[in-house]
Length: 279
Picture 1: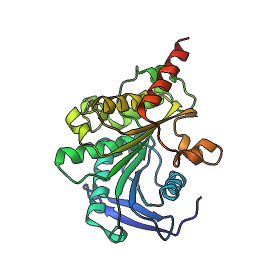
Picture 2 (picture 1 turned 90 degrees about the vertical axis):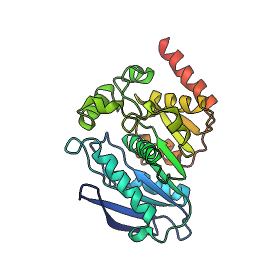
Picture 3 (picture 1 turned 45 degrees about the horizontal axis):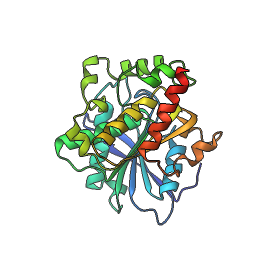
């Protein structure tokens, strides 16, 4: 674990009367700004504990405070429970609850995999409500659509690691009512252009050997067509969840510090991957 100056545990009240366990980690005495980090795990697994190492790496790389928390998980708590908890935590940031009161600087929201889905969905929900948005979004190999026939779902149907069957199961756990998947708060790729244009600046990354690769590529393409200038990096040779593999994978240890690449270059890499697969 990267060392910290401090780690403070506290709770935030959820909309359903539930207590949301939170942890504010501070990497240095001169840390500035806050990143709210939403952990992944198919909306049904993992916790702030499983993602502690990744959160610390991000904290050190950004020299920012990181707020992690345990939202309610499916199938016991399907959509929108987890998203409601994310909204409660974001509201706690805005009003400065507990140890968040003294923090200064920009505020961003980040997430990996299903956590990236929740982070993006939260921003879209804030836009619809006319509420205060984060200053930036950091979205790592996220899930943004329920299209199981995309290029990468076909390429990586059987893994390694994450598979199409596993993703279909996670979707069923989170949205047993399949009509929910038409909402942009579940499938952000289905959001209206007007909402996407109101998003704060985004950084997105994707893993090349990942059923979700096309989710990010397709989302970035939509943003680019709209004239946005968000940043995107595709990491070749790695699988879904690679930023969790810090102890064995050098790419994971450097991903939080890597500079993003303009979309055009990553689009060329995506096209190359498709051509190689067809051969």
